[in-house]
Image (tube, rainbow, N blue to C red):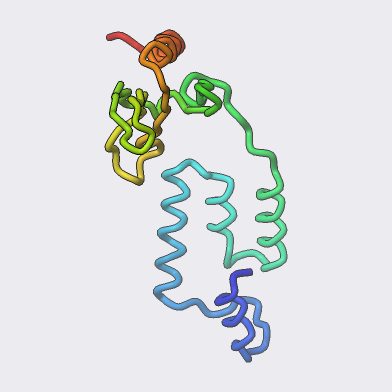
Length: 160
């Protein structure tokens, strides 16, 4: 149980009644939760919450525990599949790749050219992938790796 809820239970000095009082705001919160559960199609949970104040607490707790212990069905359809590619030792979710840049820069510390493949360059920090950089010390090797990347990504590209 969350700490703040546990503390509230300990502060409650009333005798156990069949139905404990519920504030108006709590009732509105529960009503909104029930609506939200219906919108995301969590109907099993919604039905349990709707019966919350009609059934004994132990019954509700048992129903919720049973529901939480049920395995989640996995639908193996095109919309739920997540495709990954392994590129230079990194597994990358294909749908997270929005842009690939080929960049080269002179490294003054090592005094040599460095060649990069950068996935989602300059994307915001909250993006799934941002500035994922692969460094190569020859343009030929970078070109070969870019060719490999394009070849493996081409099967995921949909044309309209």
